[in-house]
Length: 478
View: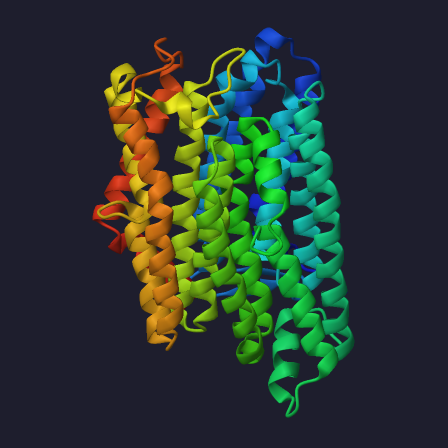
């Protein structure tokens, strides 16, 4: 059956991003290195216009089109807008870094836009095949981005590890989806949910499919014990690529969990809840403990990411709308914090120098009191110290977990948040109380300084006034 033309209206943001990515790819062929900023500006304009189209197209009520493969709802609209916002920040932060390393090329912008398109498809997917297509478009773009610096052995090694383990995770996820299809006879999430709701005795094949799906999701999000790729990829990839990998894809990962587990298999909550408890506890414990031993900033933030993914799972496992809204709030908060954290590394980097060691932050207050303050806000937020955004994100998740009856899980989360605070406070101590090893002035453009300052202020303001974002997340989930 041929879909009506009106059914493509909710897909206008995806169609626009795809068209612009292809246009930038062609236009860039005719640009010289001096004119490469045109591709950069076109990429930013693409994100801006896509945000306007998405905002204008957020429906009052949920709509499912194209034979049930695509859903347009408030959650999708909000998540997509934050993906655009985070990605725009990535472009601005990365500009000088890429120029100094001869990586300021059209391929970077095109690959990032295709990755954004993959995330958009994942966020609005209402069919397991659509979810998988979006995931693979995102993953293939990220593999290529990590390997973009071809003359770097570290980057190539990181790309190979990412590709091999990512392919394994995709295979596990696809195998789980095939088992669910075999047990329910459908790939549509609504049909799967209806079939599961009618089952009196849960099918073993169905439950095994759920296990494989969760393992695939845990691989993609870097949860323990499927986290082995995260520190190596974060460390080996150029910092601009690490910045992107660590931020926007987490939002798409949250959407994939919501679509697959909550919408598709919500009636199996009692089965997948225990699995998520194990993943969450292990991620918080291993992530926070191992991060303490790191001397490389990117590896430290990689293990920090693993711990934060544990908190994301806490909100999901609660099984309530309150918990899902808290998890959404936490995901957005983490993406904003991660953008700022890796942005600070890019700010301090310069031609021939990667500011990716903890010692590179020594004495930052003497070099730039303002950006030392911005980093202070970001580290306090990641540690969960009030009044920064991270505190209220963790508080919302912990409240949902406690209300769901998992007090012991909340206690573990609080204990290891305190443990994790050590390595964040260590950065603050280095910035304010240690003598600078690098006394050169910060060499960065006014654009990155302005946006990074705004990033830090946003973390502080959203922490002081979290109600607005929390309300948006709660309304999106309902």
